Image (cartoon, rainbow, N blue to C red; front, side, top):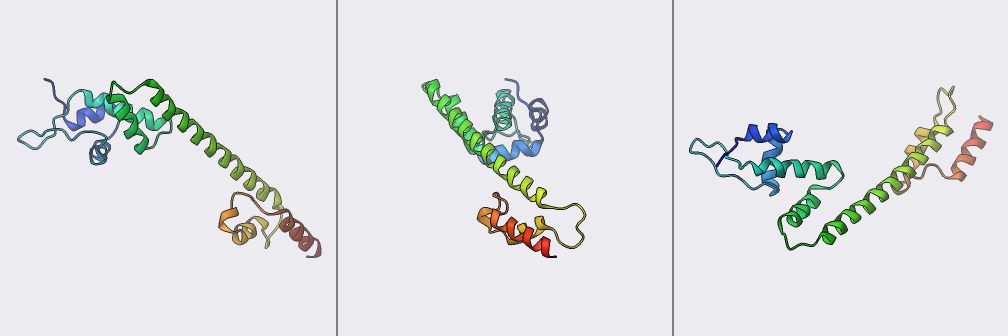
Length: 156
């Protein structure tokens, strides 16, 4: 049976050696037997498994989720609907992250809009970041804050 050393697996899978060692520690990649010299002897299937892990990560799965996908992949009795349910859950997670990112972008755009280009000593954006409670950081300044700042600016 053909065996591969760690560098060969890493090269064929498109990852570095440390990634393989990390996957072994996480239990995503079975620890291979070792030669008398101490070198790891990987089965050729290891390359396919590492590529599977990397592709799953590339489309947004966490390592914990990848672990579950590997379990589903290895058990032929698992129906496809379980895999589909896992993917649908991931899609919902991605959509929620996108919603939060859009809210963050809107909040930041509002802060940028509150800045006047030629100000030297007073920056509403920095003030909003300094004053905003942590839980509302993605919401931008309140309209009452903007009104107060506009009033302060008019009187400055």
